[in-house]
Amino acid sequence: MSRVAIHADADAQAPAEQVFAVLTDWPRHDEWMPFTKARGGHGVGAELEGWTGVGPLGFTDTMVITDWRPGRRVAVRHTGRLVRGEAFFEVTPLPGGGSRIRWAECLDLPLGPLGRAGWLAAGPVIGAFMGLGLRRLARVSSRT
Image 1 (tube, one colour):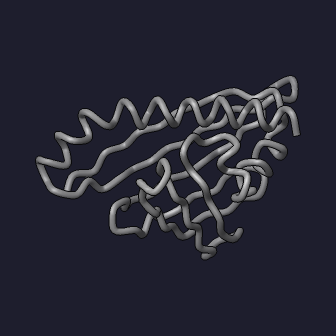
Image 2: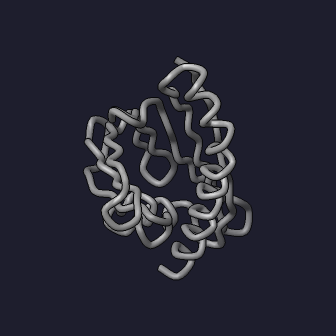
């Protein structure tokens, strides 16, 4: 099994605690992450479920929270059949009251060399959507 890592960053005008509150308000996930809905709990051990897709075409991504630092960091372990690996969001205060948001994924690719080849095509698209989502999260957090 191959493992790949990808991350995206964005700056927000909102304070870190405010960004984290929007980030972890799972029912609001679709306000900032394109094509994705989420639901779940809070704190270490809580389960999350995300659904990514358009119309009836998509997939479910199940996760368990492995690290929870209110206002600063949430990390998960992907436990689904399609998506496996770890991920985290970190929100760091910046001078002047804003914050920097980082989203990082370390994923296990299925299908050996075929999965690796698919990642070469899909990886840049996934990275672009991660960046877009974080920029939207920054805007939504600033309005809240």
